[in-house]
Length: 149
Image (cartoon, rainbow, N blue to C red; front, side):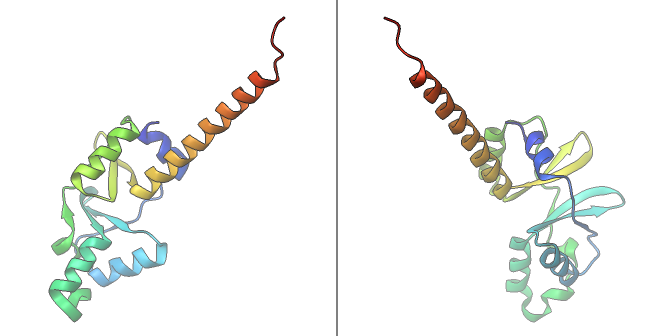
């Protein structure tokens, strides 16, 4: 299975924020949309990623003042990216090696989606379920055929 297939099933809704926005605005968007990450765009170009991990770090460092911090001050700059033609196993390895739960997927210089580790797990589970159903059907069909005398 390729990353592009997961995006096709998941859809390509992207939630973004500008680096100059306040962290409190980002949290409101993340909470309101039930997403764990926002892609940070500046002048039409992806410049970073903000996840709940960066929000928690800002809370730890800045205490009660966390909401007034600029997104650009805490986002991950120039995040590692995946490509739609990647195999899912390669994507999983990349996410594990880089210790990321959310990975922007780029096609050349264009952002086409964000894959979460949850999306990967769901896709693999669905793929395995399909394969299991096909194997069961094959085994059942073989058992029904009478042996030749």
